[in-house]
Image 1 (tube, rainbow, N blue to C red):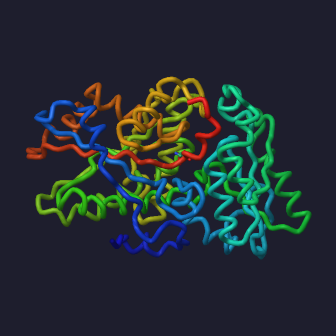
Image 2: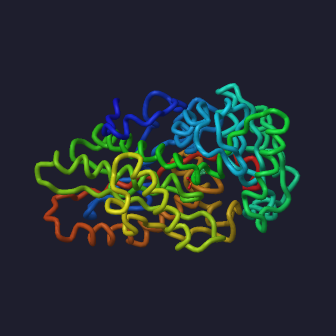
Image 3: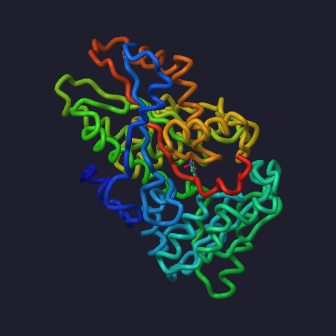
Length: 400
Ligand SMILES: *Cc1c(COP(=O)(O)O)cnc(C)c1O
């Protein structure tokens, strides 16, 4: 399957980290039946999962590899403003990737394995105070050693754990580490948490939108669409990138549709942390979507509007990284209905959102509102859950 991107987008440098084929999309038949017991209801809802946890041969495949594909060319040329405290002038070749996250961060593991693949060192900074995972753990010693921490060490990353991060500005925490590295002759390349604040962080998921569109035709037939796309929103560039990509897609597709109908796929970001209010995330995601939009050839202000950002904060639970009883239930439901393992920090909360939108009739209500003026014969609504990975953290949550 080939993915054809518009010219401006196609020209952006990308270093392949994923398999040379799309990550699979498959139906969730048992869960669909469980959630929509009346098969004659109109419209009929079908649930699917896109397996971003099967997107790459690299360790603990998940959504960060897709983002990193567009960042690696910059790592290799080391051309962008390189983190706090960097100097201008000719830049020598990167020797060390530096990044940060929560103790059971999936992102840091993916950065560590990319470093290995590129022949570079990795230093990962893990914050004990980020989220509530460590505090809530019944076995904190295990939480600090198992899951993603174990994998990061296996990958040969230098793991540094910091006690408290919440009161200190990111630059103040990171600058001394980058300076220390420079003093010993290394050339560090700083990747912010989740790669979202990186200027190129949204491009991977903008491309994923085109991948999804290519798969739609194969799975759903010529006019089939994934009407709703549910995805986790943590640092925000996954959902932001998808929004930008679907906007570009909409523009490219519109003239090719005989009925002139513009197909809007609605991206719903499920928030995973109660620390910051929804408005904060909405602003950030809009920013990430617009930044990606500009790079892929859209007019960021005109083509991407606040209306395009839909975030749901009802499933955040008590804290980031804390496995509450509803998320536990969802892990079990997915495992026992579909044989699919979701992760305790992100995708369990996304599935809670999906189940809620379906069971409470919110999805149908929203769909009717959007389609009220379209004399549509469409009697099927396709819902795509993006499985962004993260299952390696499960062993740190062994009580489930
Ligand atoms: C990082 C991560 C997310 C969130 O992606 P963002 O781009 O940070 O919003 C979702 N799921 C998993 C498993 C992750 O590791």
